[in-house]
Image: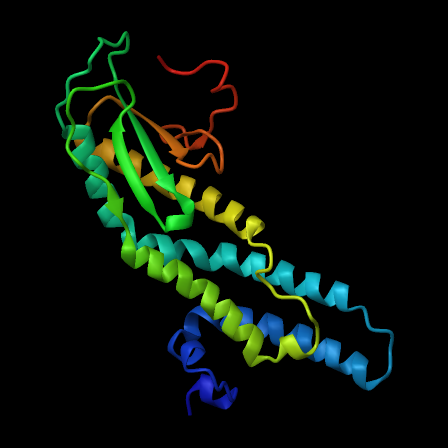
Length: 229
């Protein structure tokens, strides 16, 4: 008998993604069992504490699952696109004082992920190297669905009124950090292949997150005061 069958999991979605969601399932189930035991013994119930315990577990597991489930499958595609961008020839409208090729990489976090690459300074022409990473987008949304399905499978919605994703802002913040780190590593891998002296500046197109250095894999703290011109 498979492990998911022995656990009597009903959801086909959870069964299909069992290995991915199993650690979260165990953590959630332990919290639910503890909560139910307090109900059975008429101990004082703090549903708010219960919700935040579940929320903390979900956020911890999200950080663990997200890179390998959502990002790693598009690693080769992203790196190849960065290689094409770094090797592309382009002419700037006005000469730059920098010897390096400087690029702006922009993404839409809520579009999972629409990623564009262009020269940082004004240019005459540049190949269209934007990506609509549909597969990753599907996986990103699937991950939300898995957590929602787990919420229903364990009947947590019958124990408390709160929904896990009533406010997704903290999960989005995690996604921004993980995506930024991931894109930085892809960018650096591309540079190690092309051997081209290039600078990559990462921005979110709707101003979610902060301006990021792909080369140094860190937020550019004083970027607004000292932008690259």
